[in-house]
Length: 76
Image 1 (tube, one colour):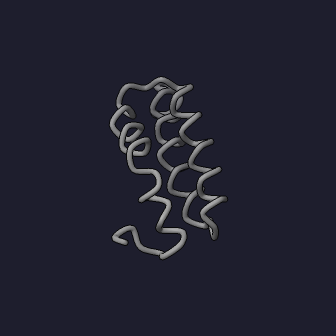
Image 2 (spheres, helix red, strand yellow):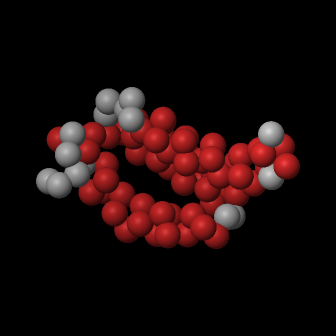
């Protein structure tokens, strides 16, 4: 399998899926913030430069992104 040959691909895939899977079921802003912080820590620990853009986006816009868990919309 491809993941066995390239462990970075598997880790990258898991990080991407982790963001989607962990945040979607969150019902409160506090839970979402905690999950986002844990995901961010994992990405920083991995040190994969391709995630720099998303790291910066989250750092700058995390409050707006977390509004989704209040209003179920990020356009507020």
